Image 1 (tube, rainbow, N blue to C red):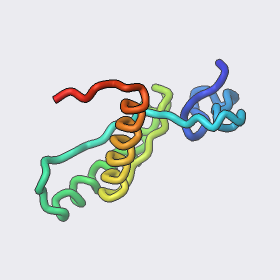
Image 2: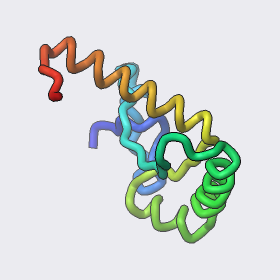
Image 3: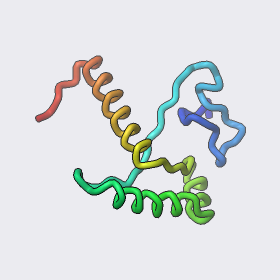
Image 4: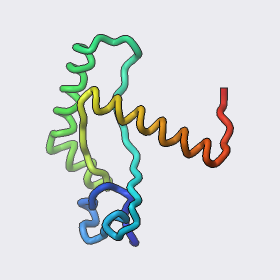
Length: 104
């Protein structure tokens, strides 16, 4: 392996550096999240988020995810909302740069 695009080294291959560590400045990763319909009250989102964060922090979940070569992390409702917006902007910028047409 040459390197990982993750922001940090993976537990399954701790001796393989990230591309950023090698001076390439490339950090790219996928993420999973739990979303709700627009208009769900913030207290409901916060309760859902607490349960998701508790699950992600559990030793069982961490073990499964690390064996799969992922870095289990969680975020607040606001952090996840910002991540979705940033990912959409980044993808949109890339699509425009590559002249990929928008589908209606």
